Image 1 (tube, each protein chain N blue to C red):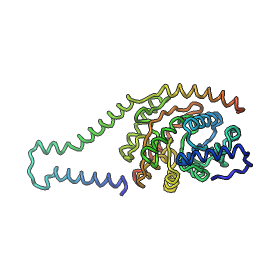
Image 2: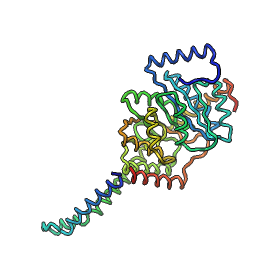
Image 3: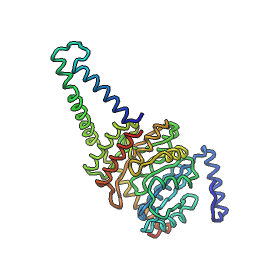
Image 4: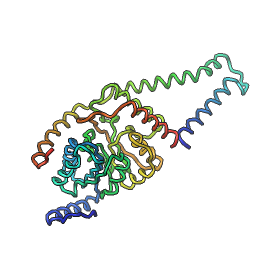
Length: 263
Length: 92
């Protein structure tokens, strides 16, 4: 079990022991949510609130690991306040000095995670924590190694995309044909992984950005991991600007063709 | 074998079969009609594939789920969260 640097008070440690006993009874599953953040001062409290609400309602045992890459807008100060409000067993702050990228943020997060399952998601409110219990349920149902949120199946969908963005969804069709991944939303980043599975995949993946998410699934298929899907709703960018530009599209295509040629 | 290699080898095999048929290397003696069909087969397949892709794309665009309710729910929850957090002492 993770050690704490501050002296735990009696009520706190009793509560923790009760929670651990409860977790043991429930099968000792613990879920670590990795939240890489950069300039998410406004969104962070909201996403944490939604996460805590979801976990309290579903009774699952969780922790939230905030990996901030030295945000200049004060994200870390807000994170510290949240840690005080919700407790340092629930909110783990593991910041880094500067912007180092998503892949290394995951590796960093895994090292500090005490759960046996890792949930990765965006911290900008586009992914809603209410789907996490469904991911968990799906994982248990099929004993899956990975559960992916999909925006393109079932009642999954996206709010806030104009026609141009939707046509880019056409790129998804292209990747389906070239890579045949067996997963309908290949660039999605709202997923549940078994901790060992994620560790294994991180060792093998080399790309960045959207392509990184795709590569994880392609490698997972190669290693014969089982993957389940859950429809999710994606609400695009409540605060802040969207990140899609010509550059992104070019690097996406380059990455896609690289995956096609090397796997 | 990488996906690229698989595609290339499949394409190569198909092309060889097609060339074989077109040049009538096996001397099976086809009618002109059959020969014309074989000749135009690649173009026909390309057009069919292209139409299928466009059709699927159009279908998926038309059936795109815009989840308005999810957005509404989120906006309401944001307000609730902000109120609750400031009551717990969060200062932005």
